[in-house]
Length: 459
Image 1 (cartoon, one colour):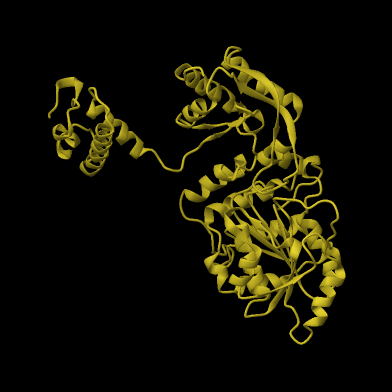
Image 2 (tube, rainbow, N blue to C red):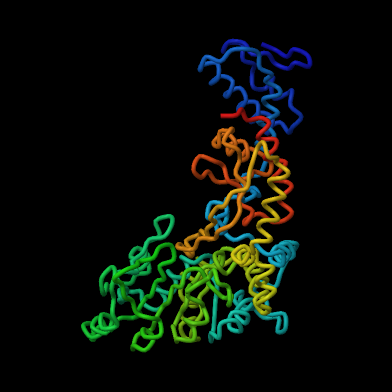
């Protein structure tokens, strides 16, 4: 089987499929790339023939499609229209403009990542954010690692480890996404877990008895874990960080989402870094890419002695943060010096604090562009996501695609667009939530949705 002019390669039975090199020669690409694309296109056609598909197929065109797919980056920008602000599958917190600019600047060439420009001696990468974290939280010292789980692991290993015990309430032996379990983290740190209390009620006396019962081998630390992605309600009791810090054992406080902002109603009773530091926790741990609104990172802050122990632990190097994430984190933290600016410019905070007028304006613009025949405005509920604020419901308008269209087919078409648009299916309809859309994304989403509806057959 060979080339047929502009029509390309015709589809024949299996024995008529062209040699890979022949199809590759018809592609305008480097040899290795063309061969890979040709091989994939031929394999696809072979599978189609074996499945009983018939009819002519332009294999050159098919190979060009494969080539374009190969050249497309695997990690791509997508537009989040789900209404889930910290969508783990979509990379959690979108970065503020200042952080994006800082990343680009740091990536442009070399940087003073571990160089003290004043003395010319080797410096510490933690110095770029330690001052900001101390200023914003009141901590004596601080350091940063590559994510929140790493921060908890390092804190446990640094303050306990080597078979020493860590006391944890049974109600805080939690599991978060990806199978990250507190008992497993403690085991990996080399520490020994001592459980106190029950799943729904733990009292201060439970901790005191655990300390007294092991007086000869005094517990190395108490670990307090915030129930980030769930809540226990009803007949419950727990112990505040202030009470725990009044005991004679260092406290590691894993506050989860890293709240620095103040005054946002949506944040409710989410624990803040400032409170835990003020209470006297030896180490406070949190993520950088949740309610803090920055890049993936794990923050550790607290007493100078505890932070020094964490910095000097062998795990610290394995868990250290890279320069691009560090640049983004520094820029994000700097915005918090002006609380009003932080609420405007850090996307996560702006989405949590979005007013009805702004949401309605974006919803109306999106619905108008799609048209009454294909959509309508409905009331919906957005979520914080990312294992944060599990009970929070953010009510507001959303654009619902008409029931005439198959929601799965439309969602599939939107994911195949460039850039992909991700919505959510609720009660048999595809919803597009303006809360997680930037202003400049509304028109683009409208064009993508309109194209998808034109190609999708009504259900």
